[in-house]
Length: 127
Length: 282
Ligand SMILES: C[S@@+](CC[C@H](N)C(=O)[O-])C[C@H]1O[C@@H](n2cnc3c(N)ncnc32)[C@H](O)[C@@H]1O
Image (cartoon, chains in turn red, yellow):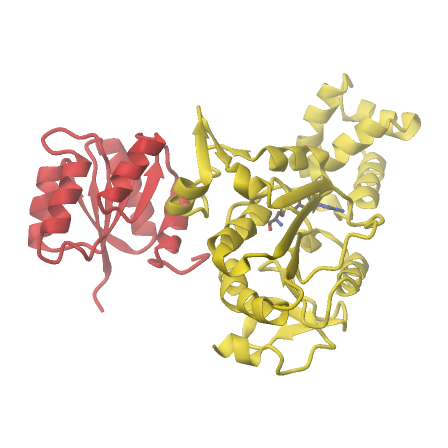
């Protein structure tokens, strides 16, 4: 089986780098996109197994990307984890309602990402 | 720190909590007790040791003990025990207690409450099957401070993300500023109280399910054995005990045995070998 793949959609280069380091540690091949539009293009090339998705980005935001993704052929498959400073309950409901699988409120660390990946059955416990 | 001071403080902590501190943990003792010394207006650890030696200040002794214990916990810790509780234990209890309609659960080292509340949320999810049941969840801990926090049920953003699925956050928590409070409904399902496992348990049982996780690990073998035997004394033959990932009963007691095929779950030795087979397989 091919390695697991992750698409990191995030406009901050620093946060992308942190996320990449964490996900690489969990044996994910990582691609990056700095906004929703570029992320759509990446998904057209190949659907990732997991998307770590920021909300507020220029050009196309995370929520619009998510709607777009879920309407693409094969777009149901990726597990989408919002990863955003939006930490209001109403936002969480909106994001989950749009078809996200999990939700991380920034700031995050390796423990939180690990924990969310475990909940989604994407990595083994305590791995 | 002087060896005799270390021994004095380690002895105090062991007597009060069961926690064993070996001399290689001197650095830990020092780093955790310096803030305690400061809080009690004591100059340094020499001063602290002196105060312990001749004053017998109860508050100071409590503060020292609680500073040395580890309170780390999180919702649905390790996930698996909670899956086992939901998929194996609960279906069995629903059948086995159908006439009595009561279920008693104990979180024996509850810390700030995440373990007991995780169980409460699972039971809330199954509420339809528990209509008319009397469900008691008791959470106890040595530290009055963590028990207070558990009762209030406020958690920070980090705490509500580790182990807790966001769907559960949406369903059972209310946001208040920077904090998240677990709902009144879930809070009302759990009774918390401060209780030292080393002391008298004051008629706390019986319990169908005991979570005693990540506390025995700090005790010496005779203390572990004693705890396990006392827990066994509170259980019906089909009761179950959950221990932490690094804890086991082997060599400590003959009152418990492994539930066949289910790592981390222990059942009274008197329980018939096949009692759980049917539910575990179902
Ligand atoms: C690491 S936490 C475990 C919390 C939870 N059971 C879990 O697994 O996540 C250990 C807890 O045991 C409590 N504890 C330590 N010694 C105790 C004693 N003698 N009696 C009661 N509680 C004790 C500590 O106060 C601490 O909150």
